[in-house]
Each structure stands twice: as structure tokens, then as C-alpha cells.
Amino acid sequence: MTKAWRAHNLGYRIMIDFHYSDIWADPGRQEKPAAWADLSFEELQKAVADHTTDVLSAIKARGIDVEWVQVGNETRSGMLKPDGAASSGNTANFAKLVTSGYDAVKTIYPKAKVIVHIDQGNNPNRYIWLFDGLKADGGKWDVIGMSLYPNPDSEDWRQMNNDCIENMKNLIARYQTPVMMCELGINWNYTEAEDFFTDFMTKAKQVDQCLGVFSWEPQSYGGWKGYHKGLFDDSGKPTSAFNAFKR
Image (cartoon, rainbow, N blue to C red; front, side, top):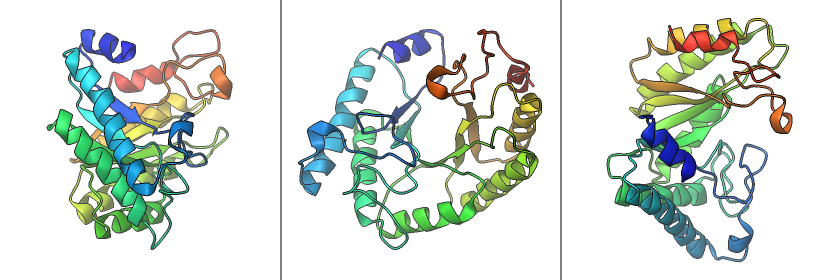
């Protein structure tokens, strides 16, 4: 709430990202909150809807506009496991949980765009099986969200960028929905970090239905919790990668 209020007062456009977990949710960890551990699946669907509604209602009560909402974070294998696990040919429960969140978002912010977000934006097969499954099982989304993180010593970031941009175009055509790069990052001290961001953003701007690019996590520095992909160096000074966002 505090960060949303600060962003609102600075005139920023706001995305809310629901992890639906007591810990940071990512491809390797999609654990239910402890308070939801013993819920039936029907109760779990309601818990997703209620939590989404409660948080967004509190934000809206402060007069804060929300433009996008992620229902889950990097949910390539589902969320709220084991109940909401997803695999090829088995996305029904995941689709129901996503839809519970989607409908709750629209109740509070009817104009907000709901994002289903997964990682490895350069891997088209990962996106096709998941979103084909969601579509077949009645899952709802407005935007396909992506992450892209080249390895710290990667020499192939240009190819990864090209593959991701091509994936964006194919997803837009296949599902008739826009895309967004929700998490883009590379180690801050990588010598070509600025080139990496500039190359990706230049190409993404040429994709008509790419709604935007988010760096993650830009304010991180000093190896915060072992994370080195911020836009500041270890002393807290901004790096030249920021230049990519000015072009």
C-alpha cells in the first residue's frame, strides 16, 4: 500500500503483482500460504478471489488507479501447488484459479488489464502449451507477461533478445492478446548491460502490441538477498544501463 501510494503521488503507472504465497513465488516455488494449506479446492478459489478483492479494494479506497494486475508470478508450472499445478495437458485447476483472480480484479478495477506471467521469454514452447491449455480450460487473461534473464556470463544475449521478440510476435498472433515484458534483467556489472537493455527495448518498441518493458529489480544494489540484476552498482550509484530507458 505504501509503495502504491508513493508511486501514485509521483504520477507513475501502477501494476500490482499477486504472488499468492507467504514467500516470493517464482518457477521453483509456488507454495500456498500457510493459512490456506488445508482449504478444499473450492475454498482455495474463493480465497484467491477474496484476497485479490480485499487488496485492490484497499488500494482503490485511497484513490489510486491500477492499470495492470498480475494474477500470479512466473507461473509456468501453475501456482498454489499442489492444487493449482500445471503441466502439459493438465491446466484445468490452474485455469480456475487464474479465472478467480481475473474476475476479482475486474470487479474492483474493470479497466485494469490482467496479466498471466511466466518466465523464459525466449522459449516459445513453454508459452504455447501453457496458454493453449488455459484457453482450452476457459482461463482468462488480457495480457501475456514475460521474463527474460540472460546468464551473468552470457555471450548469447542478442540471440535471446531476438528469440524473445519473435516469441512476442507469435503469441500476439496466436492468442490475439498483447504482451508485456514484466521482468528484464542482467547482472549490473556485465560489460554489455547497457547494450542488452537498449537492444531489447529498441526491438520491443517495434512490436505494436508490446505494452511495455519493466526492469527487475531496478533499485536493487549491493547484492541484496543475493540479487545482482539491479540498475545500481554495489555502492548504490546508477549504472549506464539507465540510458536505455531514455532513448
